[in-house]
Image (tube, rainbow, N blue to C red; front, side, top):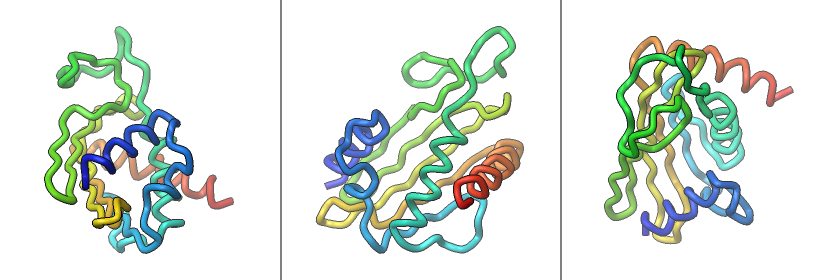
Length: 149
């Protein structure tokens, strides 16, 4: 089932999924953040966090003064968000990503679990190194405050 869900996730990231996250997320989805200790429960909170992350983690443009980091699986090193590894098994996916935020290289994983109906029931994000966690935390806090009004 996870292969079909990841096809929809990829379509969502490209802006090509009718219904977007409403199509993907279970009503009782749980979002586990690297920043917030308590699980965020429900589709609306998960959408809020994923929306904020989409604004915070798109990455910095590359260039001569971009931070030095290893090229991803596709050979690109443009500082933009990209998945560099995907491990799919049963109803679980582990997607390793790289991006750059305010000049800080960010490496992390999205750990996604779906139910047998093809809805995401858990979305967990882990990030490294500590410098990246601090930068993402700072930017996510500002973005969530902005989005929440």
